[in-house]
Image (cartoon, rainbow, N blue to C red):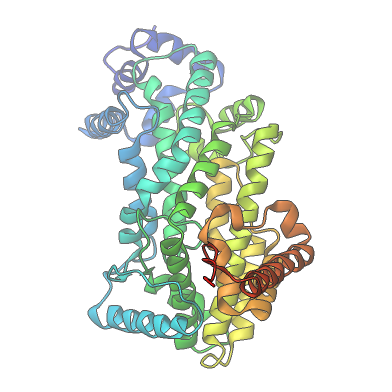
Amino acid sequence: MSDDSSEWMKLLRELFGDRAEEALDEMRRMGVDPAQLAAATGVDATPGMLDHMLSQLRALMAQSSGEDVNWTLAHDVARGVAAQGGDPTVSAATAADHRAAVSTAELWLDAATDFAPSTLVPRVWSHAEWVEATLPTWRTLAGPVAVSVSRALGALLAHESDAGGALLGQISPTVCGMHVGQAAGAMAREAFGGTDLGLPLLPEPQVALVPRSISEFAEGLDVPADEVRSFLALRECAHVRLFKHSPWLQGQLHAAIERYASGVSIDLDALDAAVNQAGMGDPDTLQKALSKGIFATAHTDDQRTMLEAIETMLALIEGWVDDVTAQAAAPHLPHLGQLREMMRRRRAAGGPAEHTFATLLGLELRPRRLRDAVDLWTALRVAGGTSGRDDPWAHPDLLPGPADLADWRGWVAARGSENSDDDVDRELREMLGEGPNGPSAPISE
């Protein structure tokens, strides 16, 4: 029989309610001596420590009440992770330098595409500001899968625990909130702007840059910092112009990702192994375990179709941005070739953005046919000028599909043939006296 007055027993009762005795017996069966553990942590020796621990625990768990995912905690964790290593407010001088880079980039892009720039004021953000602006999109895209993970984890915890007090039921939402927050915060520390994924993370097309991430990235390159800043500003502005010109694009991408995510299943054996390895009562250790292959590797037919469509669309977006950026920057950036290749390798290998989605959704957002897409848009521009390259973005049905991108030369040739046929038909109509809206009126005698 345990000593009901011990501080350690109070903690167990708070966690496991009337089944605290069972939890204590289970700990002893596993070789854990509660008295030694209490002495090591100072719970019994330090006045007020238990009350502090319990108040913190109650507050944390209370946030999760009624939720499958503790989104308040996700926000707080993301902010905390983003601030690691320092996250000073962007100075006025730094903001001015980056807005100037955006203004210059827009001028250069005017010579490369007719797509109009965003009319919204460019944003220059700290890591924390990036989190605040993008977390609503993370919630939309990652939310359904996070809920599935939370419910699966909660069921496992309830099944494997012989002592399931009120607070234990809140561990799963807490763990998943930490998980989403950790992933979003980690990406915040690496993101250059709002379009690193080739996927818009802001509600409407708007240029945004994160100076600290850009400067840290430039430190590892043998390229002047101002060139790196100009190049990344160009890419951000090009993405935003594309999403503004094709307003259907953002919704289509988000819908495809959400449809893919709706079919994600959890590998319960892998999750069970993670729980056993981490221990059920440590949310932080459990959160880390969630990133170790808990998603089922087999895809449904619908998921395979969605994945192929997502990867094709991302490749087309990235390829178009690459070609437009190269055309706009060629007269101005001496290290353009090096910068382009660096960015291609970063996307192909999977940067922080790709790793974030892999962790949260089991979805690797890779533009796998990026080089094919670059060659496709370049060929269209060579054959038909800027409009020849840009016209397909007028409607989703005009864009090449996965099979078309795999045989991009054939698709470009067929498109050129269609355009040539249209020109011939127009000339024939003119020769036959037909106007653009039908036959011309007969000439009176």
